[in-house]
Image (cartoon, rainbow, N blue to C red):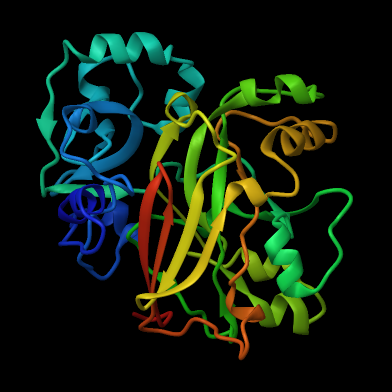
Length: 341
């Protein structure tokens, strides 16, 4: 988990993450230098080195078994829950187990705490969510950038779960997509089955939060008849991770900064307080139309600064490095590669 450790421990730089199993071939990526499991603002204070309800999925080098871990905010320490408790090694099943987080934190002081070692291979925190639903134009600054009216009601799109990839994995520049764009988003992970949820109760349905990049083929989204579903669902067009942070560690989800860097240049710098439709409103509205299930993901929109609306437009190309950060949730680093790399 050199890269996993890397993303946990330090802002910039990954080492090798590797695995010798064909079963996990789809997670292959070019090694980078970095530390994805680390909090955005690490600290040497003791509290930051205690494993908390920051959950990751991983495998060990040369192994095929998945594990579920709980890592510290500075990314240096971890508890392997799937071998020390009754917790499932699968994040989806763990969410459905409905663990009491207070009890888990209390009992963690009696569990074996290990260093985050270099032999771990970081996986997407949720590999096959049942639904991935996104909100379009949900930031005031994004609407201003596009010169469009503030929407009266949220508008939604979907991505298929085959687009999911990990926090360190490659984004593939598919040959049918010529204008590939980025957009860092706060992703909400649903924790309980819900339907017709009142807005006042909506946040009780949330398990936690993670980072997503909503990669989009703008030429399909705009120029070729508005094929939004196709433009957003190409393989690798939904990087997630590196961890899911339980909501108990995010007391004010409506005041988190969001950043995207491309090749070291800051492209996006926003804050969730500028969301037009807050998370409780989004869950309330969606649940009027469909049942939301544990492990479903809601992408809550992206702030200004996407490539399509820059002057001149600036799209991703093979060789680019996309770095995504959200306060309290950590970071991702994804390299753009050609489809045959």
